[in-house]
Image (tube, rainbow, N blue to C red; front, side, top):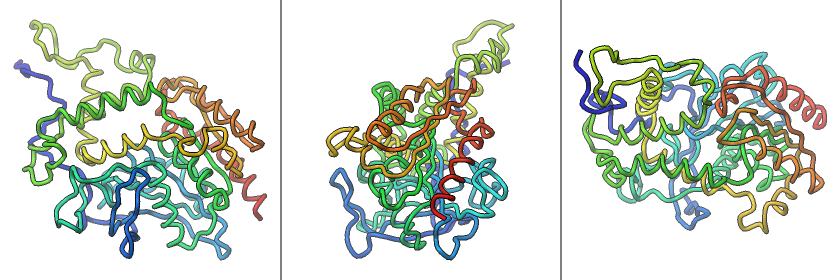
Length: 400
């Protein structure tokens, strides 16, 4: 059996330079709203954007009083397709499909649910793969730095477009939880409840360190070309760098015990005929699969932009510190930790609870028991639902 001369996470010859959605592709469930046409959208870091398109999806119906709307915020490589099947425009089923829908924890029989693709993303909202109206070519390396606060401002524009004055709740896990917390601080009068799962008030040095390695993997791929690769032929884009970034992240999303149980030391490439440098164990094949899967549906530059926005997340920046920032949250807060999460460890959610309560707010903490690590907010749906259902019910009663 011939062995590869090097470990290649994916067959790049079948892949476009970017997996970004583009105008003209099937829209699926996406809807769009534009902003920044009359005046520039000024970013927190000083950059500007014009003629921004924001993609979002909705489920259920907005009631006459506009009081049943829930904003669901996605994590790093998510998008607006939080619920629903795969199909034209959506290569995968909704990333929280088991939680959102008729009769589910976030019940679309009575709630109007909205999910917005984040600014800097690659699934319909303006990002590095989008056309810069000033040049007629993709932004690429010219796309500015964005922050979680910039992302939340675009979500507020979607709320205005939908005539939603106040969300019943803003819900999210990981980076989605960062957005939910920022909503509570930036727009306290527009939020009835905040649900932040496996998230944090500010990115930690540990999280930033892993993010830095992931970004370096992309930037060191020679086919990244400094961020200007959109005219590259299929197979000639920065797929390897993006795949390695995803593989690194995937390790932090799970746990040693899960890897040991699922893979052990089982081989993918047989070792019986002698050793070569790049024979793989099954766990390596698992990582390769996830790297290739992301490269087919995501954009390397978007990964860099959004990943950096997560590093810059600090609720206390420019607000006199975390204590003063959380004091602005007037809505009840549900934060959830995962006992096996090494990336966003439980002490970070304990801090959310303690600081909110210490400022006179109302925060409660629920712990998810799961061996699956950070990814448990996407896997342990039953436990997430058990906490979310009564919390939303409480808020509905308080606002009725």
